[in-house]
Figure 1 (tube, rainbow, N blue to C red):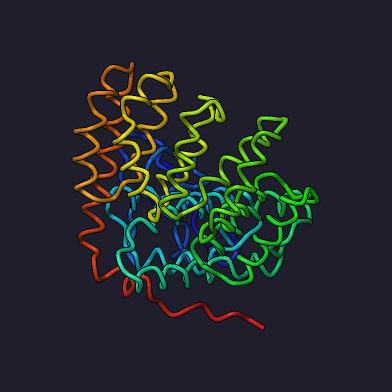
Figure 2: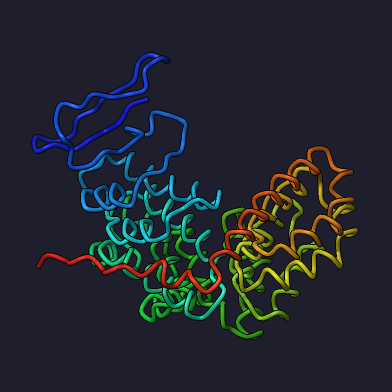
Amino acid sequence: MCVQYGTAAGLEQACLTQPSESELSLKVCPAFVYPNADEAGYYAYELSVADYKALAQNFKRLSPRSRVGLVANFTTLLQSGRVELGALAHVLRKVDGDSPVLWEAVEFLFRRLRLLATSDADRQQLAKLAVQTSASVVKRIGLAPGGGRDAVASRPHVLWLRAAVGDDATAVAEAKRLTDRWLAGTAKADPELLRVAIAASASDADAALFDRVAAKLSQAATPEQRITVLEGLAGFEKPALVQRALDMTLSSAVRTQDVGYVYRPLLENPNTQSSTLMWLYRHAEDLSSRLPPFVLKRVAAELSYLCEQSAVGEVSKVLGPKLKRTEGGARALAQALEQASICATHRTALAGKLADSLKVAPPTVAR
């Protein structure tokens, strides 16, 4: 086990090298201590609020791997129901860097965080946090296509953060601009950015846009183009359009190996979970007869995003018998529902408290 710590001279490292050792001796009193230097160890950790704040204040001094690790560790704690949300919010407001891996970790953390929101106040506070977290990187790389390799690879995660969680008007407008260009056949944006843009444009859209996006499926010449269309269709949130997207997965329009590109986004999104679950219940037999075992296992794994105890019980009752007939299906479902149950318990405990827990003073930006 090795830790990284900050001194006036820079970064230092100290390690426990023997199983019998339980204490580390540092050369000086450190400005901060990061418990898993460069993510060399396979473990999670919990710190005091004061220690998290010290890491937040010194975020840019951490190594690139440790920056990602700090964010990813919060996700691990969040999934176990043990996270200190005030400390998490403080760190997120100090996150900075152009690494795509960092912003992918931030996106994954917010995907889990938004499952805990139970009120408009929760969602509004989460939106503020998303905008504040991404403020610095947006200033540097913007939301429109272009820039170097890291900017191109980071931008889809940042656009998702701003549009899907932050409900930022500028981000939503850029998403719709890119979608319009794609529909007109003039978009040259990175495919990952297009997928985020189309889904963001679709969230409050009507059947007219759904039809235009769906028409692109028959024109897709490559797997990449098919995925772009399918994830775009999974971005529609109106129940009737959710059902249309799901119905397509039982038709020849969608290849069986591709159905996960529809199911996963719909199950991850709190706004479409309910409609998606009702559809899965109605079509459980169709799914078990049409989809190969490896696809059914993937669908089962995505059920970990459920965050309501009643849904956990119902899924086990309705889908459990079907998945037991699939090799590895029962195990995949059990693991997913265990994670979902933890999330549901945490969500209940935070009811009425999440918004306040995420409120901390925003960082002072040097000018």
